[in-house]
Image (tube, rainbow, N blue to C red; front, side):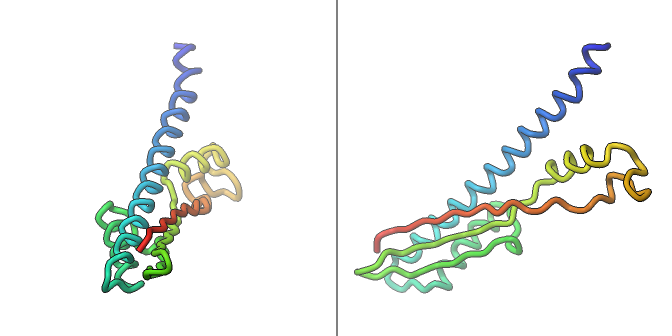
Length: 135
C-alpha cells in the first residue's frame, strides 16, 4: 500500500504528460497538413489566396480542431514565384490546465477562498506550420 501511494501520483503525472504531448503533436500534424493542402491549392492555375485559406480551414475543421483558434496566411504562386501557406493555431490542452491548477492550488479553498477549479486559464501555446511549393 505504501509503494502504491508513492507511485500513483508519479504515474498519474506521467500519464497526463503523455496525453498532453499526444494532443499537442496531433494538433501540430493537423496544421502542417493544412498548410500542405493550402500550398498545393496555390499551385493550381485558377488559385486565389482565399481558396488556399479555405482549403486549409476545411482540412483543420475535418480533423476536429476549432477554426476560431486558427490563422491562415497564403500567397498564390506563379511561374516565377512559389506558393506558400502559413498557419498558426492557438492550442490549449485541458490536461495542461488541470495539472497546472492542481499544482498551484492543491487544497480546496486555496488563495482568497477560491478552489483550484476557479483558477485562471492557462495561456495557449502557439503552434505554427509553413509550407512552400513550386508553381
